[in-house]
Length: 156
Image (cartoon, rainbow, N blue to C red; front, side, top):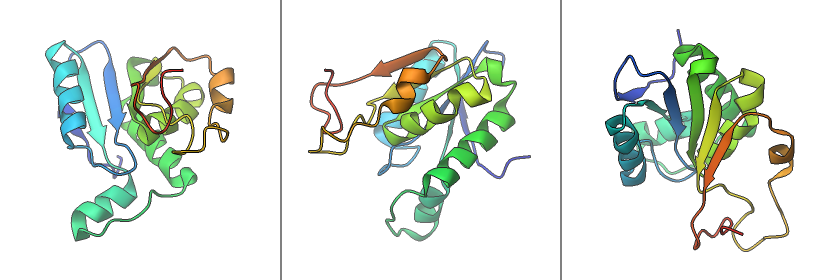
């Protein structure tokens, strides 16, 4: 049994569960995450949201802190996938950092695919520092929804 608390929306008998992780600065119940989960659930998908450990600590004590190290973020993703499995019936993804971390575990976990709302292609103001190497090797089906004003990378 996982220690990760899940917020669930949508029908339990949906063909796929979409697991969504938050971005670096906002929790799983931010307006954006609420709207995404509600919209997917209204269309018949099961949605499971969760928070990484640093955000759970922030929720408990109110102190802003930076994201956990990548190893912790990926371990959390693995726990969530194991909890929701079988992996082939799970789509992983999330907002910005949450979606990027999902892309890093998608193939390894054998999930049905991954989705990212605003992929953080590069740090703000540093377009030369691309974070795309793993995208070139991925075989999992993917969907990246990118806005035009995202400081982490526009549609181009």
